[in-house]
Length: 90
Image (cartoon, rainbow, N blue to C red):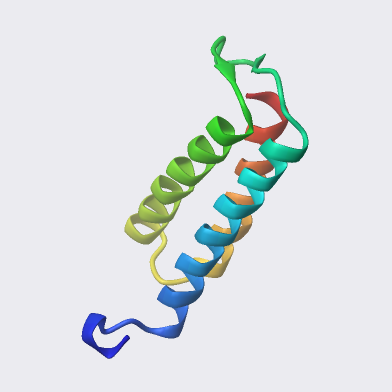
């Protein structure tokens, strides 16, 4: 992976995303889900909520970098709270 200049954190990040996609695919096959309507008043499935979580987490991390600076592990805690809220109420 030298040609892409990947670092271990970058590789771990993409491995986690890939494992999430695989896990959610297996869950969708084993346990089919009917869409539900949450506080956004749109029908969402597990995959939709995962996408909303990943997109929101990206914005949280960008805002954290711009406002707070380099203490990114604390942004991860905020993202986990955000993810729990999305999967619970959206």
